[in-house]
Image (tube, rainbow, N blue to C red; front, side):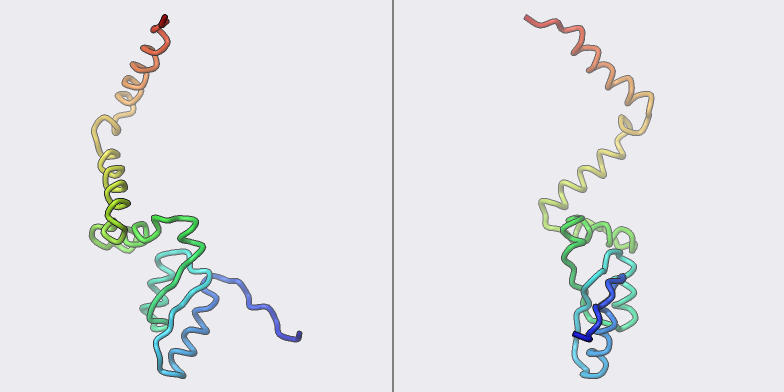
Length: 124
């Protein structure tokens, strides 16, 4: 065939979505090579598409919606995930902020307590 391959560049199908949207005056969904929150936001804000569809990037990073919301400055980025996932990620973030996890000396001291206890216990 003389038809060339479609270049696989970032957001490569957004241009097709934009042309269809404006020439046919219908809503479109951009897909293909959309990997960053800013890419998706720029496509929507510029009017190239009405929605964003994603596949491989969500397989690579299932928490992408929360990361996108956080990087775009939205309040409570975990609210865009199912409740169970949101709970797990909120817990992880709150644990990062605990004093015990902030002071490197305290982290080392507490970890060594458990490591030393396990080597001194000779067991039966």
